[in-house]
Image (cartoon, rainbow, N blue to C red; front, side, top):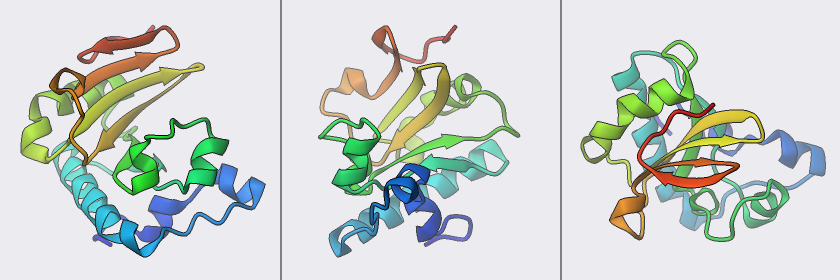
Length: 150
């Protein structure tokens, strides 16, 4: 798809493999996945290090299996959850990206901290409400902006 991100990487899922879910994207998702891969390239360039995709495209069956919401951008091919250990923590990554969401073409940036794990969610789809464009989501709920997670 792009120099550093393949379709296989954007569709890989340990949960899908374990549950034998076919996570092959439909043709209508491929253009959106290409835009997501291009966004990931811009993020990789900005951070100056490799970006690891922990979750990309998820067919609806897989999205349900991992507990994703029915309106998930992952199911449209418009989102990726990422880590960049060579850059820093998810909090540090989100803080670096937050002031540049428009320049990078990030529609929504979420620092997520759920069940003791943390990652950064980026989407090419613009959030429905401008206030929700940059948020933090934890087990306790959602907050505007990038907040430190304990």
